[in-house]
Image 1 (cartoon, rainbow, N blue to C red):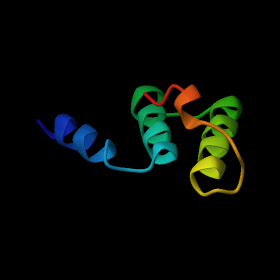
Image 2 (cartoon, rainbow, N blue to C red):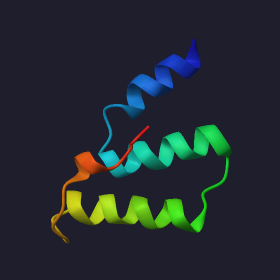
Image 3 (cartoon, one colour):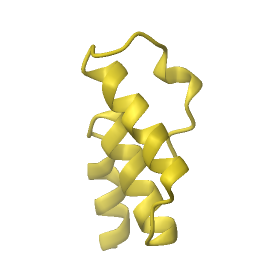
Image 4 (tube, rainbow, N blue to C red):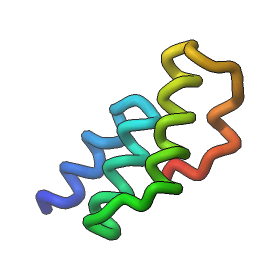
Length: 59
């Protein structure tokens, strides 16, 4: 099914893109709080901030 194919593809993306994709698929809308969390994941993945992304719930 197409949804499964999309979710498989999403799993290959950077963590911040995965989180954003899952939020959009689930809710169709991103809250300010979710956007802040996604931005924090992005900064850690791009080495713009220190941290551990394993602390974040991606899906």
